[in-house]
Every structure is written in structure tokens, then in C-alpha cells.
Length: 246
Figure 1 (tube, rainbow, N blue to C red):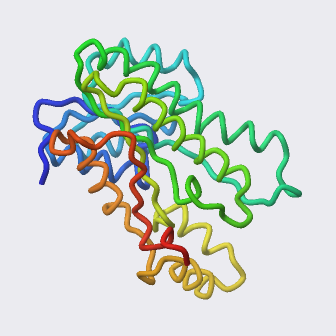
Figure 2 (cartoon, one colour):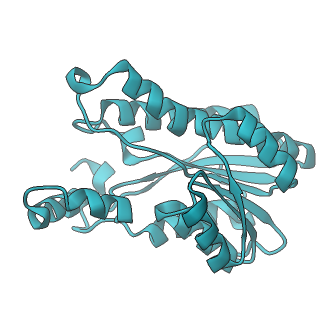
């Protein structure tokens, strides 16, 4: 396992799903982990489980992040994982839907970087891992607002990598396919035929199953660790082959 010994990591959206898996993975690798989420109840449970620390904030709030930066101090690894979804074509998507997704999925990444990257740049060391999606590199049906927001995350990541390429601070994105999180499992149960819906979702990936949160976390650990020093500006696909063209 790659080591994060003597490093402090911040993981947003860490109260459940991919964020919780990343927080646990980072803790096992030796990092002091700050679990950041607006869900204080579940966030504290995750923090207690991994012997980490908890900070409550809304990622869409620049002011919340500014306060968090004062509380947390030095950060070596920032994983911007918090995100929300929306289903709908152009005809079924309202301007308010776009605004809501951008507030969390895009401005959440921007706010996190604004709060913690300046300190990394001063120390000329740090790794930022932004959670994008297969939707950030390939158009998905019925996901206009979501695809737009995740494409923005990929673009933001690459632009920051270009701007700060010689500082020792790295910026990368992860683009998962469908991940079998509690959120996705709950959505599957809402279909008239949950078993058929589950099979269809699994079939999207060439491997015939959904991605596990722990598999995304392993990728995040690699990008966070010093062993990936030559990786910046990348959009790493963890999608079971979905992006290959199926």
C-alpha cells in the first residue's frame, strides 16, 4: 500500500459512499484524515470509525471553507468528493437544476481548492484529487446537468495543473463509472423491477458489474501518494471499460 504517513488529508463528501471509502483508505495508509460533510451525524460516525477528525460544512459556501481552513491548518492531500446528481434531458432540466449541480459539483471543488491550495503552493508540495465522472468525458443519456458539471470538474482540474505545473502541487481527477454506493442501491429499489434495473446498470460496464467504492479509493490513494509524483492533469477512468466505447 502507498503510504500517507505524516500527511494530513481532507476528504469532502466523506459521510458516505465514495467519500467514506476514500477517508478510510487514507487513514489506513497512515494519514490524519479530516472527514468533511454537511451530514454531521454520519460524518462523525465515519470519523470515529477511522479515528479521524470531523468538520461540518457546505461545500457550496466559500465562507464555510475559509473557516475550515483556519481550523484544520496544514493540508497535504485534498480530495474533493462531495457531489450530487440529476436525471433529465435538456427538455426536462431547469435552469435551477443546473445552478444546484454547479453549486455543489463545481463550486464545491473550486471552493475547496481556494481554501487549501494556497498553503500547498507556499510549501511547494501537495496533491489534489477531484471526483469527476465518466459523465465528464463521455456524454450520458438523461444527464445533461450532471454531465455538464462533471465536464467542468475535469476542465478545472486540467487548468489548475497547467497553471501550477512547476510548484510541486499536483491536480488530478478520477472519473468513475457506475459505483455501487448506498445512494445508488436506494435508487435501484425505486424502479418497478429493481433486479432488471440492477442488471442493466451492471451491463453498462464492460466488466459486467458496478465499480466498488474501495476501487475508487485505491485510485485516490495512488494519486495522493508521492509515488504518483509524475501524474498531474490526468482524468483517471475507473469505469470497468465503459469509456472504451460501449
